[in-house]
Amino acid sequence: MKILLFSHSFYPNIGGIESISLMLANNFDKRQDVSVIVVTRTKEKGSKLFPFQVVRDPSLNEITSLLNWCDAVFENNPCFGMSWPNLLIRKPKIVGLQTWIVAPNEKVTFQQRLKKRILNDYNVVTACSNKIKNFTFNNALVIGNPYDSNNFQQHAVIKKHDFVFVGRLVSDKGADMCVELLNELNNLNEKKYSLTIIGDGLEMKKLRELATTYNLTNEIRFLGFLPAEAIAKELNKHRYLLVPSRWEEPFGIVALEGMACGCIPIVSDGGGLPDAVGKAGVVFERNSVSSLVQSTIQLLGNKEKQENLRQLAAAHLSLHTEKIVSERYFDVILNTLK
Image 1: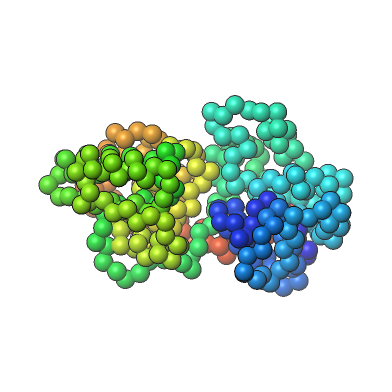
Image 2: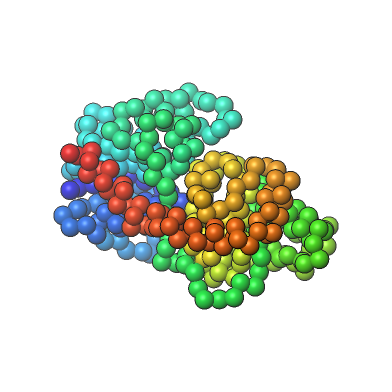
């Protein structure tokens, strides 16, 4: 089988779509009698070598030639700008929706409306969460995102820290709500809880000022940007992962990463975050500090619930390993060819 995998952005760029494209290409290519070629608009090559071919910023003739070569086309998120010649060539095609075409509460443009209509031309449409499916394409097959199970796993270390936030420090990610939570908890309890913030961005100064205002400088650590290996080590030292996104996340892989390192995820109910944690996490009302505080207090006061959530984590994580997720996508491609 010859698979042409379109990914608008690819290595050396860093991001969720890039990581999933690389994971799928690697896992497809490992199969016997399967050849994979990745097509991307990313011109930079980086230093990493791949067992499969990567065609960067291709011409129309190159795309046409590759479409004639392949048995099936897979687009990791819609790549209409590159794959449109297949409207004429008509190779079987599957698209995986990894983010919004039109986000909730966003004004729909003509281009976005056209993209949603073109989805009807695909043999199969998959979505990374139920929210993406329900809001973008009702007939989509839901395949949740994978996490790096080789890197993010639980180690035999003592969890000395309480809460941790991992992400870009922008208003949509809600890191300020983590500081508000800590202030509320420490005002209500004799025990002083701790918070670690991993990430960088425009909100860093505001968050530091907020920590000073609440006299929490001794309880909050700002670690800045960390590579994945260092993030995994830090997650292993914490009991609870906070994902208080104001933006409706398409999925939320960070919740899986925290869970895999032994954290109980506490996430907002926006977008695909409830799918990301399943029954193994706590969900609160998006953009509500009071709901976050109430949900966290209930969790902290219920050791039995905490233990139950930790026990449910393994089964949930088993559905989101790179191997399992790539097999689900491969089965979709195989069934489309049949």
